[in-house]
Amino acid sequence: MKRLFIHSFKSPIGIIRLAATEKGLAVVSLPGESRGLFDRQIERDFAGYEKAKGGRINKQAESQLRRYLGGKLRQFQLPMEPGGTPFQKKVLRRVQKIPFGATATYGEIARAVGHPQASRAVGAANGSNRLPLVIPCHRVVASGGLGGYGGGLALKKRLLKLEGAL
Image (cartoon, rainbow, N blue to C red; front, side, top):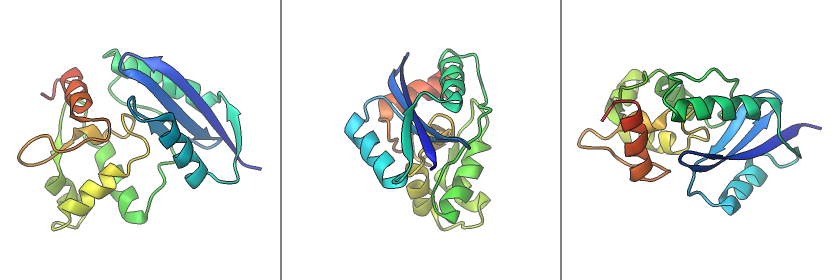
């Protein structure tokens, strides 16, 4: 039976919940997201998995997230299982390439993935990111301002300030 490891920790920005398979990090739940929402996502996306606490990949993720939030890590080095449709995965692979301290617009990402008219679809794909922070969807902004963020605009601003992008 496949196993899903669950872990949570208190970070400088609040409680972060993690879920990882034996192959890679699969879910990062931002502070402010309810435990119920996290649990429902786990049940929906990982039905049939045996649940366990801890996990080697979650411990690596916690360590790297702590270093990132402390301003000491610029790029994550973790095995990942981001999930999603082929288009969502393509968008998220491009989002991963946005360097620390930089931003890109939804339109720039749409053009980079070969769908120049798909800014809204890029926004939806970005919003479906199961690995925020690790896949830096906070670095994607609207052409006229910050745009949205699942963790809230205050957290998006805080992360962009941490990186020197604001």
